[in-house]
Image (cartoon, rainbow, N blue to C red; front, side, top):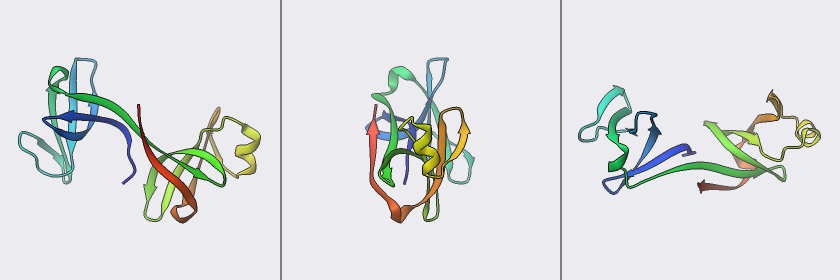
Length: 122
């Protein structure tokens, strides 16, 4: 599973999370969990005060593809959606990446071609 977003530790467990401007943290779980409300099948949420959260970090998945560094921003079956982090437009163009916005280049890469996949916590 590719992760890109906040992770909160609450009651000794890690949950996908979304911090709110209101001082609360929204925790998400893929299965029924005590005190969580079902938003849709496979998605449950509980809102807790930030003071109850033991740790809140941002996790992203990085990799190398075709010799360059990327962030993995999505996945579908045997493909990974990768975003170039090298910051050089000529390199991105030579790699055949799609220009999403100014300085943002992405592509779908076969998972079998992607190397050095790892999670980074910040």
